Image (cartoon, rainbow, N blue to C red; front, side):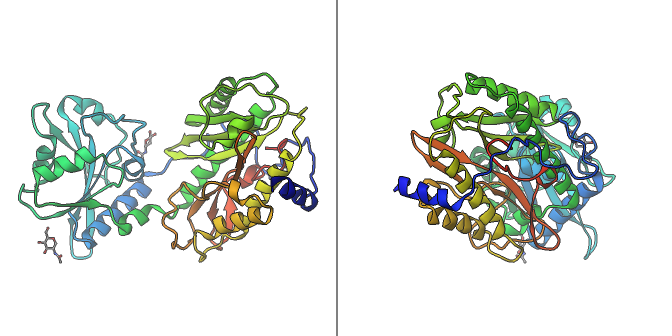
Length: 423
Ligand SMILES: *[C@@H]1O[C@H](CO)[C@@H](O)[C@H](O)[C@H]1NC(C)=O
Ligand SMILES: *[C@@H]1O[C@H](CO)[C@@H](O)[C@H](O)[C@H]1NC(C)=O
C-alpha cells in the first residue's frame, strides 16, 4: 500500500532540488543570529495593567473572589514571572489576583503573592508587575503555619466563607486540597472560559515577540544545518542547536533531535543515533523570548544525502499537507478545519494512517468546535511517521491577521521549509 501510495505521490510532485538555503530577505531585514531579537521590547507595563484589569473585571462579573495560579504561563501573562524565575517546590508560592470594586463601573485588581516567609526576600526580587502605581502585596506563611490558612487570612476571606475561587487549570492538586481544607465551604474551580479566553487573542506586542522568537529559531536551525555532516550524533547536534538558539537570543532553548528511523517516534527514541547520508534529521525546536515560546520543526537532509527511494516524496507530502492546512485557515472557520485539510491531503496520497497526531496542539487551541478569530495563533505541524523507516514533520506556527487571513510567524524569514536542503 505504501509502495502504491509513493508512486502516486511521485507523479503528483515535481521535486525541486535547491541549494539556496535562505529565502530572499525582505527589505530592512538583517540576517544573522546575533541579536536578531534585540530590538524587540518585552511586554510594557500598560499592557500588564490592562491584562490585570480585564481579569479583575471578568472575576467580578463571575462573582468570584480571586484567581490563583502557581508560577506558570498564566503568572507570566498577568504578572511577568513564571517557573523560569521561580522553580516549583513543595512550598507553595501563589499569585493571587482579586477584583476590587472602586465604583459601580470600575473594578481594579488587587495583586498579591503568597510566599514562604523565609523566602520573602527572594520572592520580592521576582519581576512581578504591580497594578498601575500600587504595590504588590506579599502574604507570608511561616514554616510552621498552614500556607492556605495564611493565604485566606491575608486575603480577608473567612474560613467558613462560601466565595468562589478560580484556579489555573495546571495548579497542583495538593494546593487545591489545601485551600479547600482551609475553607471547606469555598467553591474552588478551574478558571472558566470567560477567564481562559482572555489570553487567547494576541496583541500586536505579543505577535512581534512571537514572530521574532520563531524567526530566531528558524535562523538557528539553518545555521546548524549548514554545519551538519555524516557521523555526528543526535546528542552532538542537539548541543549545537541549543547553542545556536542561545546565540539567537532565546532562553530555555533546545531541540528534540532525531535522525533516520528515530524520527518515526514523534517524541523521541532514547538512543543516540549517528547521522548517515541516507537519513533525514528532524529538529523540533523551541526557545523563550520575553516569556513567549517558539515552536518550529524542520526535517532536513545532508547536502550530499543519498535518501532511500520514497523519502523525498514523503517529505513533499508533508509539505503539501502543511500548505493544505494553512489554506483551510481563516477567521470564522472552525479551528479543526486545518487539521482536517492536512488529513484529507495525506489520505489522498495513502499516508493518512501515518499521520498519528493532530494539528494545532500548542498555543491555546481548545476543543473542537471553537472558531478561529483574529489574533489567534496555531501550530501547523503535519507529520508522517513510518516505524523503523522514516519520520518527517514540518512545523510553523501561524496567526490570524486583522484581515482574517492566516500568516506564518516565520514569514519574514521566508516561512516554511522549501526543501529538505532549504529549511
Ligand atoms: C518583566 O520581567 C523582565 C525580566 O524577566 C524585565 O526585564 C521587565 O522589565 C519586566 N517587565 C515589566 C513591565 O516590569
Ligand atoms: C456571589 O457570591 C456570594 C458568596 O461570595 C454569594 O453570597 C452571593 O449570593 C453571590 N451572588 C450571586 C448573584 O450569585
